[in-house]
Image (tube, rainbow, N blue to C red; front, side):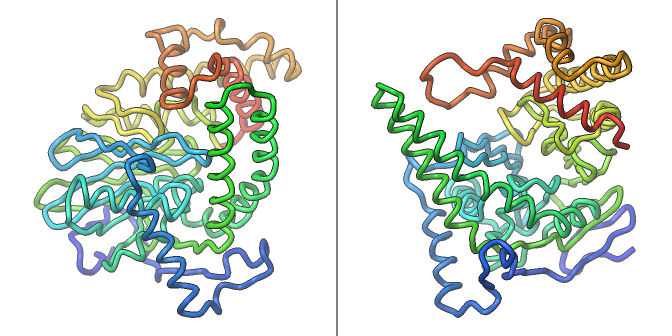
Length: 396
């Protein structure tokens, strides 16, 4: 076991420390051009673009920062065409730790500037990637442009998946943009509402900005990785980074601050409908049970609002368990996917009906979005979960 230099970080399991990786040829297979040979002016242009995004006007503010406890803040992402994750912010005695980095480097740069304006002038020393999904990792590069040393921390598994899949996952998101623009264009054409037309135009603008920024994307991989547990010690408080088991992905980590009673969970537990696309349905509820054994008050999820207490966390956990049980039983009974979707409904799921969880999800998932009609039915989300649980039911 080795301690990372220039830090008060203590591994509690096997730790590997990688050389920082800057792959400017990241999109070679996508664009046919190699950024590795970029000149000083081209690199300066990218830095200037992110610096511009880091000082938005009030109308362009991407996050709402809420104080949870002394030194603990929650940056709730505002709705965007390309969804950003939330961030947990831990202000320590001399520096800052941020959890997750959003869909674009410009979004991460915007949060960094907002932290400096609204929270503290202390530099960010560590960035934590809770898992590999692009809305939590594609902003990593902005942290390498701060002028201060920043280490990126993840599980070994998350780093491995980023190395193996980040290129193809980003390509999928870029390939989907033309269809999303077309859908927004058609929606605007059909609408008689000037407000809805303006909303569609803004969504199209955001999609195109994503295309332009991400075509020259630089992947920065984690520089500190671990298998089970890692600790960041500081005079202000400790941060325990733990892998409790497979859940939303195979590498989810939780960040626990015992002194301040805060738990940052990424997407292994949050306030939206769970995404089983890369998930482990049979294992997920047990992983949440392990994380829930910690004594926390502030639940800082990867999406949706901050919560006090464990209520929503356990409601989602119960939904995951019930969905898995129902799909498992339906699969054993030989039901087709259409039959499953007819039988596994919002009304049939006790976990959605308990404690007003279904109503909470609708409110959380539509908060801050323009109301041009009724919210999408929750059944669509249940259908997606049914399909993904079925596809991933045997994953271990």
